[in-house]
Structures are given as C-alpha cells and as structure tokens.
Image (cartoon, rainbow, N blue to C red):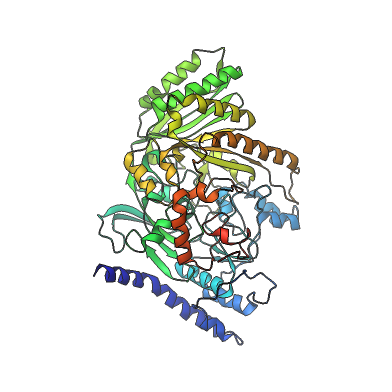
Length: 615
C-alpha cells in the first residue's frame, strides 16, 4: 500500500505539464507549412546517446521553423542574448554599450540581463559568451518546453537564475539558456507537509527558482517576522545557493540552506516534472541538497523551512595594524585564542581578513544584546589597547546590535545599497561591500575548510604561523559561518545528511584566498588592466592557499566558492558522497544534458561540455 501511494503521488505531479506541453507544441507547429513530422513524434522520445552536442552551422542545428515552434510554445519570448562586453567590443562608447556599462556595477541589474554574469570571467579559465538563444521562463511549462527542445535537438543546455556561478556554470557559447529570473513567486505556509510525507506540519516558504535572497528576506523576515537560512549576498539566486549547500551569515546557528529544504519541483532531462522530498524520489531530493547546481535537473520551485527570528542581529568591525612582524604574529596568535574561547559558538559568523601587518574583523552575530557583544569582545580589544607601541586601531571598533527584523530592510539599514533604477522593486538592495564584486574579473580563487582541531591548544601555533606566512603573499579570509563546527549538534547532523562534503560539519571556517580586477575586454572606456600583474597575482594566491591546505590536506572545499582548476574536485567538493551522486546523475541524466564545469558527471565530457569522452 505504501509503495502504490508514493507512485500515485509521483504520477500526478510528473505528467500533467508534460501532457500540456505536447498539446501546445502540436498547436504551434500546425501553423508551419513544412514543419517536419518528426518534431511531433520525437518530442518526448529518448534520443540515442550522442558523442557530441550540436553547434550552430551543423546540419542537425534546429532550423528557423523549429526555433519558431519553440518561440510559440513559450508565448513569443525566445530571445538572442548578448553580453555587455560583446556589445562594447562591437561598438565602443555606443548608446547600448554605455547603457549596459552603467548597470555593470549593479549586481541586481546583472541578474536582470539574460546575457550578463555576475563576474566578468576568470583568468585563463572562462570569459562571458552569450548563448545562441535564451528561454526566459515564466512557468514550469516554459522550462519543460525548453528541456524537451534541448533533448530533441541534442543541444548544449545552460541554466541561469542569478548568474553568480564563479565557475561559469550559467555561461556557454552555442547553447540554449534556460533563464528562470522571471519565476519569482513566494508563498508562505503556516503548516506545510511535503507531498506523501507523514511529518509534522511546519512553517515554511515556497520560492520559485528565479528569486534572489533579498526577495525572500523581504517576504519572510521584514514582512512576516520569521527567519530563513539563505545566502549572505542578497543578489544570489535562491536555487543556485541551495543546490550548492548554501551558507549565510548566520549558518553557525541555522546550518546549511540545503538542510532546510523540505521539497523541490524539478524538471529532469526527460522533460518530466518531479516533486521530490525525503519520501518521494529521495535519492534525487538528496542530490539537490548540496550536489551542485546544473547537474540533476532544472529546479523550478523550492520549499524551505522557516525558523523563529531572534530578537537581535549585530555586527562588529575594526582594523588593527601591527608595528613589526613579531607583533603581527602575536596579534594573530591572540586572535585565535580569543576566537576559540569566546566566539566559537552558534552566535558568531562572517569573517576576518589577514594581510601583511593588518587584521580586519567584520563579523556578525545573532541573538545577542549590545552589552553581550561588548562583553564577548572586551578581552581582545583591551589586550590590543594595552600595547600601543605594537598595535594601533586604524579603524576603531564599532559594535552594534538592533532588531533582527530590520536587517534586510533597505529603509532602516544603512549598510544596504538600494537598486536605484526607476523600475526596481522597493526592497531590492545589496550589501555595500558586495558591490565591488559586480563584473569583477577573477585572477584566482581558492578555498579550503579548516577543521576545528586546529583550534586546540596544541595546534594554535601551527595555525597562526600558516596565517602569518600566507598573509605576506596575499589577503587571507576566514569565513566562520561557512564551517559548522561550533554549531548546535542537530545543525551539524543535518549537514551530514546533505550531499555536501561531510567535513563541513567538523570545520570551524572556510579559508578563502582570492582577488580580481577590471574586465580585460576591448571597447571599454577604461585603461587596459595589467595582465602580467594578474598572472603574478594568481601565482601568489596559489602559494598562499597551499600553506593553508597543508594544515588540512583532505579538508575539502566549497563547490560554490572554489578554484576553477582544482584537480581533486570530486574529493574536495563531495568526498565520500561522490559515488552516490554519480549513480543518481547517471540514472536521471544518462545522456549528460546537464553539464557544468566540475559538476557531477562532468568527467565524462570535454571541458566545454560538447564532446562525450566516455559512457
């Protein structure tokens, strides 16, 4: 009885849109005088495994009539995207170039542009290349239409929500882009129970795939007074963050965004709409909890658990400069001791940066009053002030606390920058420090989880020495909210149940070494960047990161913030979970239509995702 019940639930959710899609395609083709009948008969057939994807100019590339049929099926919205950089290279200082450059520093505007990516590429790795066509999906039916068209014509498929993929996952030339930005409905639930599950009702929110986290925070926190675990960067797409595991400023208390996932709607490469959860197609559901975006299906909708909102959120920021290398070593040593004794708990998140002779603290907290924040930091601040000959505050300590409900409220939080475009939503804004990332060209990016064992008294000196040495080469950031050691036991256990590398549960932070510069493209009204310096920068990043990796050679790395060139990516991103993920990938996408760089199953394809290397 239980098995048949689950099958009935799956059948009801999986076939309805596929049937409507077939009728719509047939109606559209009726107006084409010479439409090939094979389009109708093959619309839902499984194509034979292909050794390569079709490119423009090849005999199998869809003809105009077939593209028009797709256009009809999606209500005439098919478009040909162009990148900002392409527009400026073709016509420097022209109206289109200048208009788009004005939005190149606006992370929300970049997400609103089918041809844009949040960063402008990566040195010797990838540069933005517009897809041949884009489907601006307004509904799950639009996604089904696009997926079926990709499968029928053996095309390279790309998925874009917010476009924040550092590894270029939402970008590929000669592809069909499925762009979910317009799918932005949000529904709050007082008592949600996943389909075919017998779990207790819980408060939750259902979010369509095109939403940014600022959309969700505005609805859930600012308006409804609840908390949802999402991303720190407000312009990141909801789906992409969850599929990578997902960290936010307060993950030390609330865990991975993926751990709050209750249910998802996903279109798999066979064109079937599947509603998945822990009871219904649990393997596919598990793969979506940190298995990486763009590998298992096109997610159209997610339902996430919401949590009680603490009374306060707070922040601490200051900079300290040391007068000598010896003093700098003592400053970092003392910092490690202070963090381990006072801050290594569920209250504190975000980051500290070490570079040359400076320490920059930029941390946040949840659930603490202003006096409790002061008490937590007084020992370290007083210790620094007791040695004015060794240390100075180049930026004095600023400790703040306020109502958590106002944290993402652009009307009350001065740390947010409002999207000033005339047609922008009132709630749309980004953190002031995040604006510098928009359209940056990465020179290098490395990350490594550092285990909590390094905070033990016998290991602290080794950690301090590595940080001092690495900081002489390049800025080193420790993101404490991106490691779950110090979190409540249930938060860590929930993370281990997800597809992300289980080492995250035992890491006290994610160490990041990264930098970038201006886009190195023709036609821009800026001085050309120094590419020799960019390559030197990349080498320094690699050297500094190597010192930190030596502390925990098997610590692992976060798939959404990592090195494009990482050779041990399967082990680093997923560890012992990779074998199961690959099995699920082969089951749901045996023909490899869902390809992203260093995604599950990408080893079966050429680096550009066009040529199959093995079955």
